[in-house]
Length: 315
Image (cartoon, rainbow, N blue to C red; front, side, top):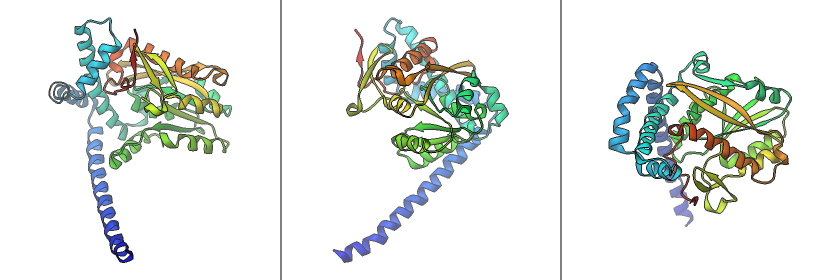
């Protein structure tokens, strides 16, 4: 047995080295491809988007069944023609956003600030300058990838972080962290959030941490349900728990798409004293604000996400 272990060890190490090299090559190929797209002028980028929309929607039909199901269930009062209209607008925006996200790799800070404007930033900066930390609630609405540029508008001494779901594909996960970190935002694996915030509580810096809080929890993790888009849907409550435990203020990020390639974000208080709220009330407030955004511009929400898989339709 010992002999076998000794001879197997270098083989296993060799296999790991081969995988590592393959991952490196894959990463650099993808990185160069995305980097090349990032240098395209916006006019060319949107021409490419207009072309790609047709195969994505009509040929590949990427998650069309999930999108149609989500829309029909979420808007039971709309006619099928209206649902299909929203569906087509969503896919067109979906391709736009995918290509816009590539631009993060090369866009200048001036152009980024011109295309992704943040208003009411005094609210956050005042809190951060006073030594307070902030939980920033947002959803898969609008171009959430460009939200990482909020660092260009924030108090310079504050630490900016975003919680994300780590991808199984290591090269793609690495690329995502590089893209999102272009303007100085730290990406934190969602399963390491508590540790990150515990460590943050031990230093004397202010933190603003972005949480995309409309993810669907696993069945065993369900603690609360929210009325959301005609569903009684299980919701993640960890954001609220950590926000209250560490005494963070809670802000909601409201996003508008002004026109193609231009967005405006506003920070809105979810509650002045989140620590005083009953359990799960902060989460309910978040979903109320997110639904109000979606009702106004439903095509800007990520309908390909199967977030209602454990939900119940409201009667």
